[in-house]
Image (cartoon, rainbow, N blue to C red; front, side, top):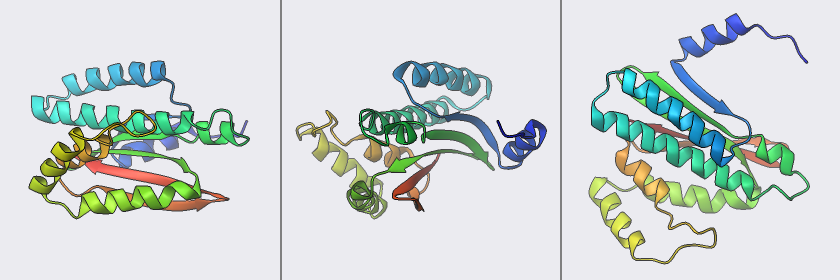
Length: 180
């Protein structure tokens, strides 16, 4: 195991406003337990009820999205690397909370995801509401999802969803940032 300086790591996290991190494999039980810790933290942070619920809802949605995507790779040759690539971070940025998530993506999954995100980024609050209503009437996709999660996060966000793509060997590390 490599040596590392926990004091320096803690200080770096603090300087960046990072409050909580979940990193590694995302089983349902881990996401649920970390969710309990997030809820407890937010209850003690003296946030408005609306802000607390929005931060928690975005955490849950991001953690579920990461976990669901990673689980699709369990039986694949590179499965272990993919499964362990997940991360969700809750941070403060001034008066706002920022919930960020990331994981490795297969290259073929990048274009559909970025097209969806760009569609959402182009909509105002009314457009997001209309799209949400439209999606509610559509059947579930092949993964049992209605595609509502990104829309719901965009509706709760104080600014358009931000994302980044970083090439990592033959994969792409996808990062999503939602400001509440």
